[in-house]
Image 1 (cartoon, rainbow, N blue to C red):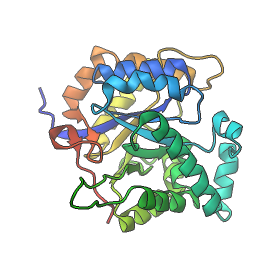
Image 2: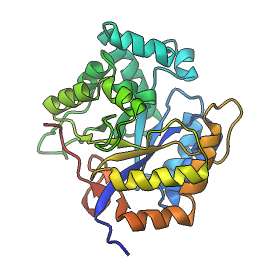
Image 3: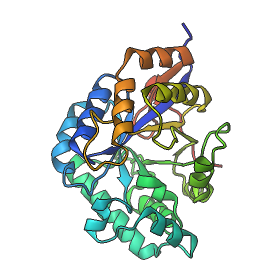
Length: 291
């Protein structure tokens, strides 16, 4: 047996996108197979599905999956296709004031249901790092969640941020493209503001293959991800009609729920952990502000 010496955050994205995802994520978290999830608060399911996470409060990180590109975002009046969002980010960036208003509304929607700030913030299709959005996000966090409090109360811990920076060994085009959309710029802004970040992102693939190939990929991600990195996943109990990555969600769930995954964690010497913004001690990864 390899001693668990590396702490990683395994985060299930897209909580509340549909029932199969919410139920699958909650089941995996109860089984200790996840340490974080990111919530799509624009989904009409969020208020009801939050009940699935109540008994997990304090055991996993529950964060905001900032959304500009889903059908929910389009229904809310600010949504774009991923291509459209990328083009806007590259051709001058999002209007900062408008982006700030969208971010505040999504934070309001999270807190109204969860009755607490998010433990972390990332983005659906990595929009948290797009030009205009990243500046507005850091400004909103500075204003909304003061870094220190008075002597009479415990200092407020800010949510930590996901940096969509691939691991050193991941040179795939998709990973380079995701990182190139602003991961380094968000790191600089967060560092200057004293906001902690997870140092790298793993779990990137094209949602192709099979359960067997996913197991092989996970073994590589566990090996290559540095301490305190996020490994993202997108599990669901089963494929939902109309979900373009539904088959991948189903095989991800099946693998993460299996004995084989528990053995992979042990073999890689990995312990699943929360971020320090949400917890402390041995069960938390030690996140830092970027230099």
